[in-house]
Length: 358
Image (cartoon, rainbow, N blue to C red; front, side):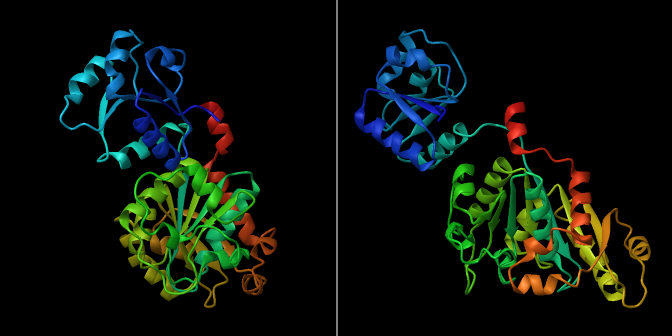
């Protein structure tokens, strides 16, 4: 494991406390009991935490000035800012007040900066349009291409998108478990604790009444998601709520699924205007067949939106959804072809490639 942080202190209690915070952030930290011991590793980690007891020692050792140095003290009566200047620290953390800040700093230091995931939202112009099916099929297609993908269920009353994948009985974190989360969330923790199938991870809801999810928890989740995945696909209901709006605001592209029907097209016109308040790039997906002969071109002209593609409903899918066997049904067919086209247009790069490039 790469060294994320170096703790420089001769105070065993401070060292133990900081190691505890590093463990909470899933970050690898080591302790150097003085400047001489710290010298060999001084330039390696992203984060250096210097205890106030060691600030003078670090200052007199002539260690190279570098970013990412924080002075840590539990004594509010001292002059920590003077000590920070002498030790070459850019920040000061006062314990216990700044524990959350330090956990976030540990978590950030423990993760490589390898770029950001693409976030794709999917919503529909009417109920039953097949939004969850399209979102799930996109997740499956992306994972099948080796893209590390997160499928987010932003609809607490949608019945659970994990059911479509047959993952409802799999152990793992759901929204209920993250509802009161505060601070930075480790991407490694997120990937390891969510239910998943291959490269497709799923964040859904537990059965029963949904719990309210705090704004901090939603922010923490999407922040970790874009740091740790290649693609985030969010299934957003027409009335999005806090989670849906957060997804839309972080989206690179939002797909508006419209059945080739007059009422669905009229509804889509109003919904598109609402979506533009939260997301800039709204693209149209038209689903056939049209019961009244309305063509995809006519829908596109009526809505004046860029199109991401069209497809015909697959009669195999309803039974596959009920049986939790959507992955098998999505191996081929018009929906699968559409998803491949959409992913090709996004020009995504696998996480491992981004890590190497970074």
